[in-house]
Image (cartoon, rainbow, N blue to C red; front, side, top):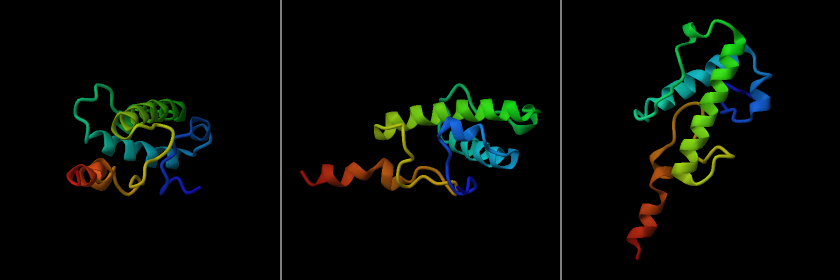
Length: 105
């Protein structure tokens, strides 16, 4: 698995990631969380996570937050929705996929 291109949501896999992969995952979550200003907790700066265990813990917390957000948006938290990858965030097509069908009534 290329963690630089795939979002890792499995906590058992997070424990096996190398620091560089943890950093990429944390960076993605930090960027994604900027789209949700109401979130109280967010991924801290990497300089505030001095050891690998801190990064693992923070990534697991970020995954929990992400899954909670996805559950409220698309109704599931166990899988990465279509349109989400490490290059970007949830795209508009996914968020508004039902708008087209609503207009057909």
